[in-house]
Picture 1 (cartoon, rainbow, N blue to C red):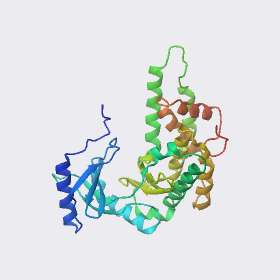
Picture 2: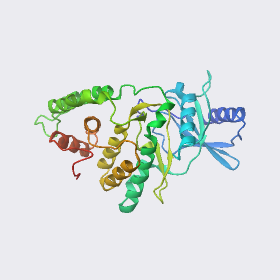
Picture 3: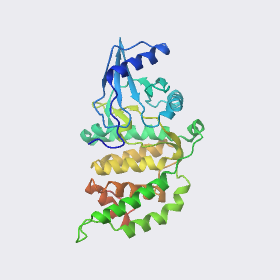
Picture 4: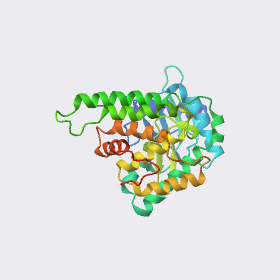
Amino acid sequence: MRSPNRSPMPDLARLLDETNLLLTANGLPACHSLAPVKDGDTANPNAIAYSAGRKYVVKVTQRHPDTLERQLEIANALRDATDLPIPRHYCCANERGRLPLMIMEWLPGEQLRTVLAAAEHEDLRELCAGLAVCLATFHDPTHMSLVSEKDRGLAPWFYRQTIEALRESARASRPDGAGSLDAVAVRCYLDARFDDVTAAAIPSLGKADQDLRDFLVDPTTFEITGMLDWERVTRGDGIYALTLIFFRLWVNRKLDGWPVFCDTYNRLATLRAEQCPHAEFYLMCRAVLAQRFTKRAKEIVDLLLQGQRLPFEDDQA
């Protein structure tokens, strides 16, 4: 069954026709064929369009189609101002009755979430260092002038989602209480930090839903080759993105890459990433929301409640 946040690929013949109409209107070579990307688990289906001597990526931006022109502007501005591996956004269309298309430069690589599984030792450290370089560059506060929109209530949203997850966990808990969350303790933990997260620890640009799917990696060299998905970029708190990297490394048992990630980020970033209530708040929320799917997330909840200063201070197991 398809998740309610996922969208099916449109009819390919129609997609090819509308892609070529858009390309031609913008003076770009038309395509002779296209094929869906392997990962169809997305709210915005993607296809690779093939033209003579080049390839494009065509994204059907079903979710937030109103952001098309703005995301093109922001992605290209960041690409021009930095050395971030952002694909050139060529053109977009959102006319009534037409598919909400974004046509972009094709970049090589595989999703970070799949490459991470094979990364070990020096390859893992290379991958994490490259990821830190990208985020430190993206979080440069000089880029904040590109947008006027503030973070759309990320902390309150996470708080509401976490409280609901605690209620669901209580309803589904075993009669003996084994494996259940201490909902009262978690809520007290979050409440003690909630007022602090109203002001960003690392004021910076933020991307909604940023995760491992948003990065492409060369599976041979472990170099970051792409930063994707620019639908919603606002002013936010960079600490959330860093906390999420820790969470993903923890869940995937790849924490050997965390020290080089932190060292690289703090060497390059304008503001250092350090232990703070913001990081603890976001890490607790993310762990509670994921604990139904992985025991490793429940371990984070327990460690935080025991007073460990994750993700930036205590030694991690």
